Length: 71
Length: 205
Image 1 (cartoon, chains in turn red, brown):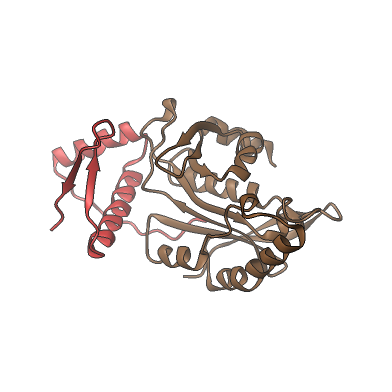
Image 2 (tube, rainbow over the protein chains, first blue to last red):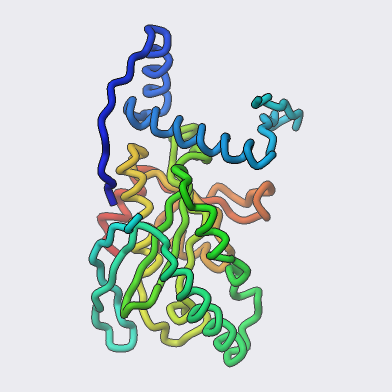
């Protein structure tokens, strides 16, 4: 089930690396896994926005919706 | 892209013997053609002859052609299928990105969410007695767990169950039911923790 993988070097600033490391701890994932998930989510959002969909965050309690402007 | 093929075995229920089969890491035109030309007519025939109501076959409205088209090029979605005797026996579509674990001990962590999982009509005991093959559901569940481990999700999986399958997820898979989900047709939502995934794999059924 494993597809062939390619390697790349990623240059990040200190703050970017710090955010990545925090996400790794929070999500219990490796850096590669976090970045892979980020790429998938980015693609998903792009495809939906291209189709004309809007991206919202909804407060679970108040049901208030906030649109994320994707230009 | 050519899917990876893993040799597996399904149990032929009539003679209680294993038969060689394949787990495909993908859903191709072959599977969709089987669904259109074999599954759908068979389902109709079986429903008519056994007088099975739609209530007992809750996945009949699923359109696998549309679902497989949604898969194309999307990194977040993966398809799986099982082939035996050159005929598709089971299909599954999973999402590796959009859902997070809800069970308290795993809350917020990534999981493999099983969007759709379906057995060929002739393998369903509600339609056929005896069904042709058993083991399709368990093998697809194991594939979802393997993908979850490969992604670093430690075997965590989640799904909304059709009522006809609730028992399978509780008894056979040992998943935890988190209750009915009002945001998803009131279907019961199930999750499998890394420990439950390990237990299911160790059980080997």
